[in-house]
Length: 159
Image (cartoon, rainbow, N blue to C red; front, side, top):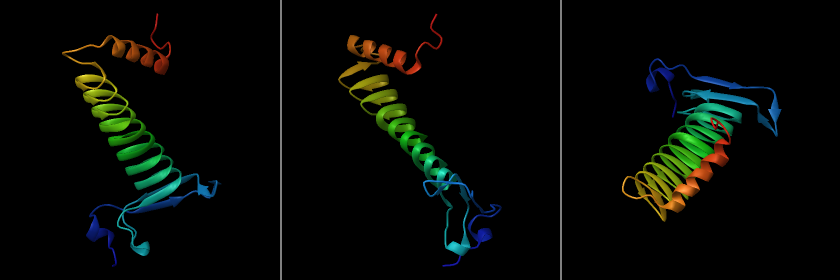
């Protein structure tokens, strides 16, 4: 199947770039945006230490679908994931799934959001073992979130 950039995405110019510098056989920077008819790609897939593309895989990944230690995108999967749907150890997003999840709907061991489901949960609708919500405030949850926030943010703003 042959792709034509004009037929697939009017006004969208495909872009490909890989830096000559590498780390562990990966380019330090890789950019892949738009279709690539020569390689039969409908979407660009960037793979590098820093990856930017329609689909991005790298240590730091930015894209529609992003996979990396730090992932930012519509669908973000990684250690620290920030996206419309974020899934990872630390997940932030409209829907956040992770050990620590924060978002509109958050599901994790520690969850905070409009709808929070977790062992420790804080939000407009909180479901879990220890919760902070509009109808109930568990003292264990208050202590946990207080110490959690102190450990995460340290002494920022404390006076």
